[in-house]
Length: 269
Image (tube, rainbow, N blue to C red):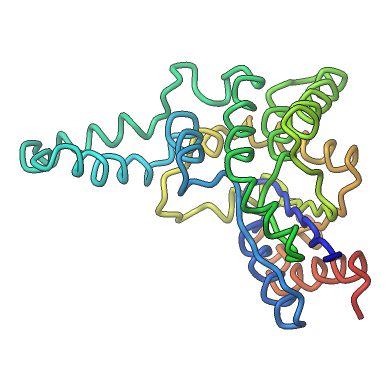
């Protein structure tokens, strides 16, 4: 009987380098001959991921894609008939998110369902890889729902705990999605994340532009990581009174620690 692959989940707060560390880990494992693939959630290149990315999060590049690609296919003369200023306004309107109250004020259980649907829709391919013996690294999984949606519940740890339980029952129970075999949490304090975001060209999404949400989500992530027995990797060596970029560990340094965790868990030499 073929040995199944492992599900390795990398979660983290804003700007913690989840995608980068997933790729670094992938390269290290494959260099050792350990068959591994990586993917991330939400899957913005799929229908369910686009629903999360544009209507809920208001990702600006998805608004551009919708207007330029989809509208161009369905209405070939659309761009010619619209002046540039009108196109710009349409894209801006779409990228504000479609919930009038803003994503961070949407009922957390409602928001959870969109994310859960994206994971369920895209899970068959992940299952196929695992069944074939391939390890799969996931940049975000069910636990991201717990961090971001739990962060909407202020000053009530009991209600947050109920939210984590509800999400686990929904995704791991009702939907049959698997828990991770290896769970790693990258902790980037919000004040340092703000330093890293300066100068970014991409417009922030609905979660990213709300500093209070990011602070609350950070606390929820820390709580959730403890609750679900994550390995926590700190992204900052020593916090300064005034945060400085020099305090932040290099991606290579963090990557070595992440690899050591995985190596020990997989019992690799």
